[in-house]
Length: 79
Image 1 (tube, helix red, strand yellow):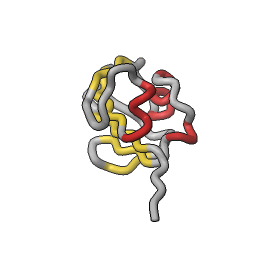
Image 2 (cartoon, helix red, strand yellow):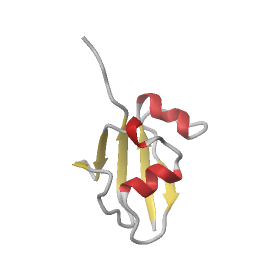
Image 3 (cartoon, one colour):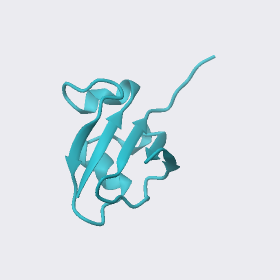
Image 4 (cartoon, one colour):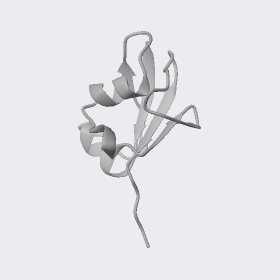
């Protein structure tokens, strides 16, 4: 299956040449979960704080299906 991924902020460093929010496609085996995508991209799981799948907040163990759009955000701090 193929999913579209958008990395934000500091997570762009895990996809060479990526820009924040710029989509790219990834092929995954059928039945994959968000955590499988994160592993494939070699992102440490603790660095993904907010996960959106098709604009809905999801968890690391959420199922993915062909055509999903996944947005990954790091923890964000501020004052």
